Image 1 (cartoon, rainbow, N blue to C red):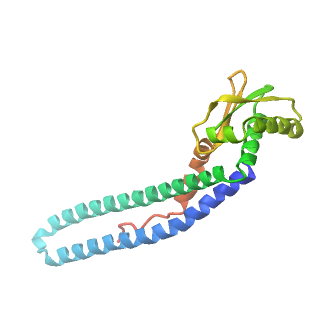
Image 2 (image 1 turned 180 degrees about the vertical axis):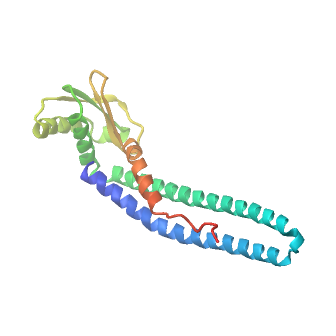
Length: 213
């Protein structure tokens, strides 16, 4: 993983941690409210029941407990889904800012170099977003070719594809024979990181209070 990619991941995770704290506090308040109401209802029910209705009361208590557990399970799921959606939206926003920034050309070159380093062959095509193709196009292809030779010590022919990429940023690198393709679009890279990010986000949210008395 590149330093820039790791820094972006850590920034996303840090932002998620702040959001998680706020969501967790709100969720815990909601959970306590649900539990307090359930306990009050159960206490009132116990006090008002006659001894001959004890069996029915126990049945009702079990039913109420099951419903409470279902409510808490839905609340936990809602909290996690809300946080994951917020993290995804924030990550996409930051990547869009990166694509529009002054450093995007250098980012494209580094991504292309990483792709070529992992591929064989000597001829490659760069597939760019329409905006990036118009701004840099052939110049970027030449820069990537020079970087491959200077940093990797390989002779390579790097050309600009006639196709364009529908993406917020990044690029796709293809071998000339069509057998090797490296998708370095921002969306693809975020998808590859997403499982790791979700695991770390989930770890920020401990279980809410349960139904144990």
